[in-house]
Image 1: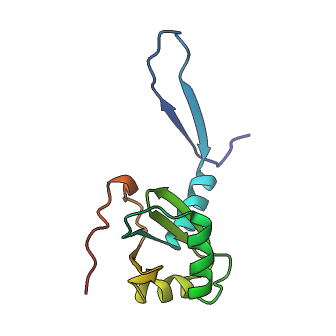
Image 2: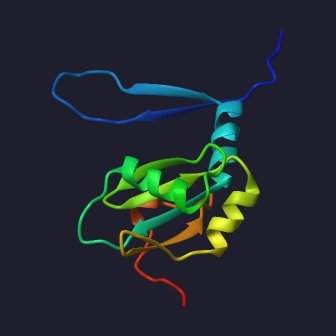
Length: 129
């Protein structure tokens, strides 16, 4: 029997003195497709603040600001860099088009996630006016 599923293997190389083997992670195409689908309905932005905020506080505030969008989830990537995940496209568009937003007097500009983004290297310092 032949499987129609495609698998992708990702390995990481870490040299160490213990001669340990590399770790190999196998990802199924469906898992990758599901992750990309989730990210396609997400926005990224950096809160322009001189202090860090807890992701729970950010999530509670934006749930209130955006009138409780269905299943809003927020992931913190770095100091004040957040990814906002939405279940439906209407909520994504409304949040994207209303940007920039204010959170505790600090501005955050949100832009749509793209598959080729390298989140740690993204420049979130410019906000269109």
